[in-house]
Image 1 (cartoon, rainbow, N blue to C red):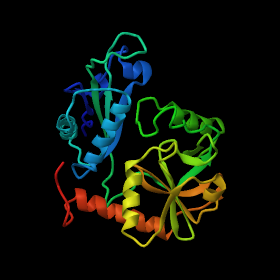
Image 2 (image 1 turned 60 degrees about the horizontal axis):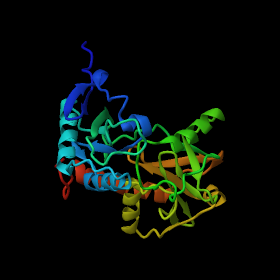
Image 3 (image 1 turned 90 degrees about the vertical axis):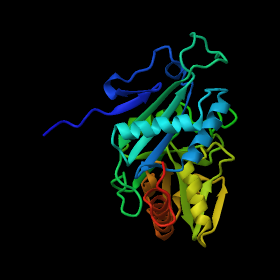
Image 4 (image 1 turned 60 degrees about the vertical axis):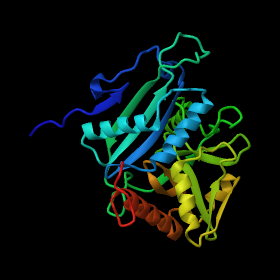
Length: 303
C-alpha cells in the first residue's frame, strides 16, 4: 500500500506541495487580514457558479481598494491547474488574494503585487447521487457576539479578517456547547446569520430569510435558494426578524457553499428540524448541481 501523494497548492503562479506552501510574514494578508477570498466547490470537475463567485470577489476587492490586476481567466486557470494536479473532480476550493508584501504601515500603497493562493481539499460527490458533507442536521445556539454593522465593515466583503465569526464560535466553545453553529444577531437585536452560514426558516408555509439590507453576507448559496424558491409556489419574504420568530419556526435550515442546505435540528435546545419545503429546495438544489456539473441533459460539463 502506498501513501497518498501530498496535496499541491497554487501559490503565486506555482504549484507547490502543501508542506512547502507559505507566504511572507510581511504579507498584509497575514499582518492585517488585508485580503479577499472566496470559498468554492467543484462538482465533477466544474467550479459551481464561478461567474457569481468572481463577481463577488471583485466587489470585495473594490471595497478594499485592492487593484490586483488579475483577470478572471487567470484565476480560473490557477484553479483548474490545482484541481488537475491533485486529480480532484469533487473538491472544496479556497481562492485568496492579498495585497501582498508592503512596508509595515497600516495605510496601503496603491501599487500592488498580490499574493494569490488556491487551496483544495477533497469532498464527496454532490448532486442527485451525492453525499452530504455533514453527518446530521445542525444544532444551533444564539451567542452574545453581534454581527459587525454594515456601516462599520461592509457585510458583503469576504476578507481574511474573520474575527467576528471566530469570536462567535469561541463563545460556543467557552460555553461547552456541542452546537454546530453560532447564530448572531445584529446590533439592533434582530437575527442576522451564522458564523459561516446564512439562515432560512419556514412559518405557515412561507419561506423567510434575513435581508441583506442589514448586516448579512449575501451568500451565493442563499441567492440560489431564493431563485429556486421562485420556481415553486412557496412564498418568500426577506426582512428583519426577532429571535423568537425563528425559534418558533416550523422548519429551518442553514446555507453555505460547503454545507449546501443543512436543516437545523434545534435552536437553543428547542427542536425545529427540516420539513417539506426544506426537502423540496434541497432537491431542487441537487438537481441544479447535477444539471450544471454532471452533464444531466440541459447542463454543462465545462470548468
